[in-house]
Length: 108
Length: 118
Image 1 (tube, each protein chain N blue to C red):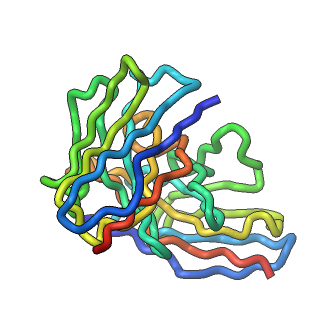
Image 2 (tube, rainbow over the protein chains, first blue to last red):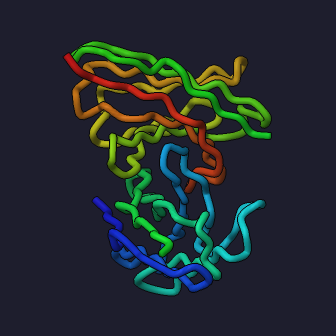
């Protein structure tokens, strides 16, 4: 079955840029989506279809997927961005939805 | 605004059954596929099941195939998850989520906790 990989953790100072990566076999040919989850809360979609932002998500959140890995970039990081971030894709061969293991972003 | 409200969680013994519900509002329920996603304590997200907008197509994750059944009542804008033969490994917060376009999840409920323990 298809697997996604993510680094367990990323630390970043306020105002700097955080890059969260998501790896997988031939991931550049797939659509990748990203979710933010803060402790005790439900996940929130922050990027869909590699680089599109839902309404209400700040422009500081951007995504790219031009090859391995796909990347979620958070510019001008704020304390409120501290959360777990999950990448996700749809494996159309088996109609299953795959999540990466998650990356914990810590704002120093 | 889109609202998804799960209910039905609780403590259940191994081997028993439980039925979860998800009441939807703020959107045209029968125009969207719907999903269940779960999260074991301290763990990551795991997709559980999907049902198409008209209920004609369903699919399940490998760990619940044959034990869980997803269904929906479009007249009541409600999604269900029937969970049978529950195991301790099924202990998790269960979220319902809306699935536009068939590839991702754009709105999530707050979740309901299921604990399987003797």
